[in-house]
Image (cartoon, rainbow, N blue to C red; front, side, top):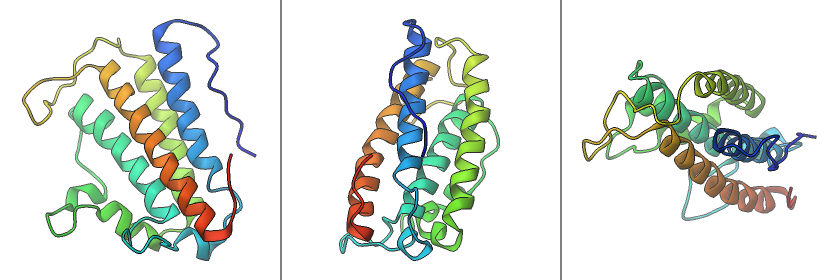
Length: 171
C-alpha cells in the first residue's frame, strides 16, 4: 500500500508545497494499485475514450516533465507531448495503453524523485527560463501550485475511472 501524508514535517512554504505535491502524486499511484492489466487500459467513460488509468498516469508524468524540465529549465522537449497536434492533442494518453501500467508508474515515480531534487535546489522565486503563452516567466512556486492543482484534479478522474473499471473506491 502506498504511504502518503498531507501533513508536512515543517511549516515553511517549500515544505508545505512539496508535501502536497507528493501527497497528490502518491494518491495517483494508490488509485492504480491492484488493478488488472485489462482494467488499466479500459476507458469506461463513453465521452472520454482516452481516459484510462494508464493514460492519466502518463499524462501526469509528461505534464510534470513539461513544466519542470521544458518550461522551468528550458530543457529538451521529449516524450509524446512533442507530437501533440490539433487533431491529436493528447498523444501521451493515447499511446499509454501500449505501455504496462507498472512501467508507467515506475517511470512516474522515478521522475518524481528527480524533480524533488530539482525543486530542492532552486528558490521558489526562481523564474522559469521559458515563457508561458502570454510571454511571462512564471516562478517555481507557481509551477508547484499548478502541478498540485493538475495532479489533484486528475486524481478525481482516476477515482471515477477506477470505480467504473472494477468497483474499487478510495483511497
